[in-house]
Amino acid sequence: MPESLKIVMIASEAVPFAKTGGLADVVGTLPKFLQAEGHEVIVVMPKYQSIDYVRWGLNPYLSPLGVWMGNAQEWASVHMTLATGFPVYFIEAHKYFDRPGLYHDAAMNDYQDNPRRFGFLTRAALQLCQDIGFKPDIVHAHDWHTALAAAYLKIWHWNDPALGRAASVLTIHNVGYQGVYPASHVDYLGLQWGNFTPDKFEDHGAINFLKGGTVYADMVTTVSPTYADETRTPALGTGLAPYLNNKGDSYVGILNGVDYNEWNPAVDRLIPAHYSPDDLAGKAADKAELQRRMGLTVDPHVPILGVVSRLVAQKGLDLLAAALDAILSNMAMQFVIVGSGDPELEGYYASLPRRYPGRVGSFIGYHNELAHLIEAGADFFIMPSIYEPCGLNQMYSLKYGTLPIVRATGGLNDTVEQYDEATGAGTGFKFWEPSPAAIYYTVGWAVSTYYDRPTHMAQLIQRAMTRDFSWERSMDGYLAAYRRAIRNKRGG
Ligand code: ADP
Ligand code: GLC
Image 1 (tube, helix red, strand yellow):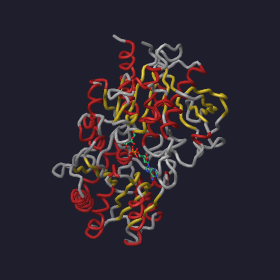
Image 2 (image 1 turned 120 degrees about the vertical axis):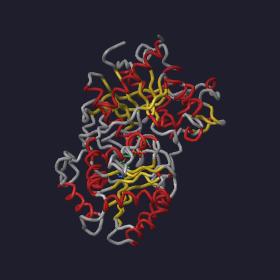
Image 3 (image 1 turned 30 degrees about the vertical axis):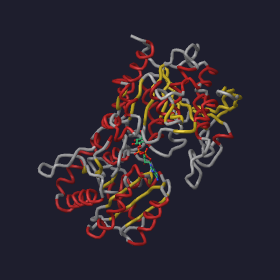
Image 4 (image 1 turned 60 degrees about the vertical axis):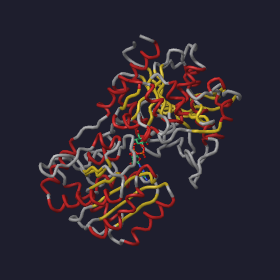
């Protein structure tokens, strides 16, 4: 087995080029750390409209790229950049990716041709490897969008000089999104009707990308150990549990890492004042700036509770909404939120500052700089998720000494240690029941700790800031998964 691995990652988003959630952080960061260990990694993703050629130094690399779909010949151009220190290839196909959104239009309607768009991306990425002579040991697919890579390797490329030896790893960032589409796409996607069976792609008469990918992949991973356990059960497996269980120990949970060059109060370029566990003065300055920016009363002595999130059901922010009036009425505190998504939740959170002037600030939309400022300036960060495969913000929060208040699910459970009021141990506040009442009492517990147990607060902050969730740690998990995938593929 080669010491140094050649890896192609195929994904629908990656920082700093295009991001809607944590998937982008992972795909844009993990390769840097693998490369530093001596592995050769390339990333292939779409050239979306929002990705600027000049800003990112995109250079024409290959044109045309001919991509055979199951029943059609398609064409693309390929651009490349080394802006992140490793090669990122962009598949440019105007009819599929030259649109304002990544997955949906401004009204949040999914693009109807998403199965074709991402099926095409996946085939194009494999074709690109063939055309440029990149012979990967590992094809690493992420989420339903590119899950078909695992199937294509076995259906189409089993005997191919460039791809025949490649083992596939599928990382599931969220079982809640499986990519289920009408069977009419089987031909275009080149899945062959013989494979349209319940043990492979077929799911109640439709095609299920993630299920097919899971079945075909040599190794399947998800993004935290607890979520791996949870998804093996019907409650959180969302229909996939039997197929994940079939993988046996070829399905594992590997905690995401954090890029501490980006998310670290000692070096963060997006916050006004730096700080570290030894000197927290900068955090007070960041708090004052956050209060100014979000229209809050500037007051160093009142705790701020923060949220940065996609506003979707998964995140439990409807439960928080149901608890917030009681929280704001009964507790001396401020609240800030940056997020976008569900129009109803957007409307609710947008209306709060009018109802609680000087005490609540909200920004509806995507705003990376404010996200950093909230991490730095808030005292607490809440994630009441119904489920959370890993979650990155709670790990960012720990590093910024902004104590997480989380529902004990998935990666939130694996990364936050429960505060012990008797000893002062822990790094945050956990609750189990998905209810407004549980949120209310846990926020109350945190706020009372802030006012009544300042020594414990200081200890919690110190401990939180020195916990290590760096990629150096998590990368070993991926290397083990890659080697296991190669063994599974090649036998022995
Ligand atoms: P998910 O991927 O399910 O959205 P994660 O916690 O893994 O959850 O990752 C979310 C990432 O997206 C974090 O880096 C967070 O800061 C960022 N993010 C989410 N919503 C926004 C927003 N409205 N503005 C800026 N950043 C956001
Ligand atoms: C998904 C999950 C989130 C995870 C992220 C990156 O979007 O919802 O919990 O952190 O992927 O793996």
